[in-house]
Image (cartoon, rainbow, N blue to C red; front, side, top):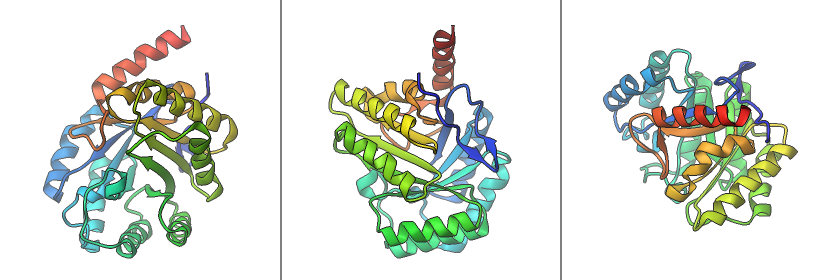
Length: 259
């Protein structure tokens, strides 16, 4: 069994360390929607909250983004906030701003220290990756560098190279999410996760999406994935499991594994 490298913020591990940290998405389109989501999600005790800002209607208004992030952070208390914009090729929503404005929004959020982590795709321009790495690091914000493929699951060596690329570029956490076409693809993702966990010095997160891939959200930690995503109120990706169901299943699997 692989031993997942725990995600740490300010030197403290997220979650218990015995099972993967559970990340729950926020997908509200307005500040009111987001506050309502939080009222439903926070009693379920997620380890992290991911604000999927591509769902947010006010994404073009940086001041509103910062104000809303601060409201989320105040309401969330000790639960860390991960800020994520997915583009349409990564399973995200269409947004009214271009990439330079997205980068500027991320930079302002880091400088305001109203979030704890940011997620940015490896396929983006290397200059933007470097800029965000520098700004996030200088403001004590952790950076997830991710690879998403909503069409298929590449071969194991390709997946391993994506994990290693994130580490090479200075990520605090490497993430890979892919779409399976059959059960063998799920095994490919889990195998790449295990190999990466043995070769890397940073935490990694992996998942196989959709119904076939849902087993990876339950069992991925056995192969080295430090976190998994679960539905608190609304899903942000195919195959996510309700947080209460996922937590109960993880506990059952953990007891079986540890005896």
